[in-house]
Image (cartoon, rainbow, N blue to C red; front, side, top):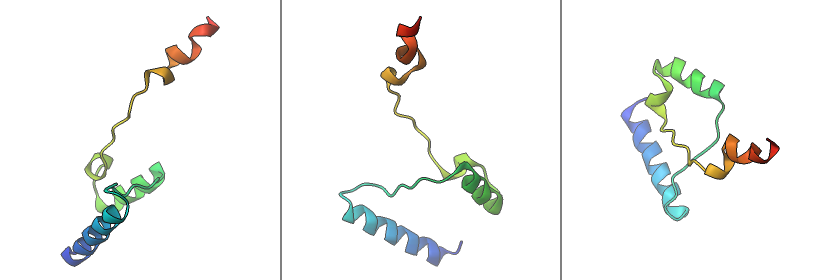
Length: 69
């Protein structure tokens, strides 16, 4: 990707953030799409994305099925 394209993308992302109360742009993509991008760029998923799960104890296996024992 050339530098001009990256600058355009950065401007669009900043504009999105300004128009949406400071929220970062996010979209859902399949693991196949991530794999395709990684093949194209010859990189690994962790080079493209940060992945953090907001853990909710009430959704754990133990919490959801504790009454079935």
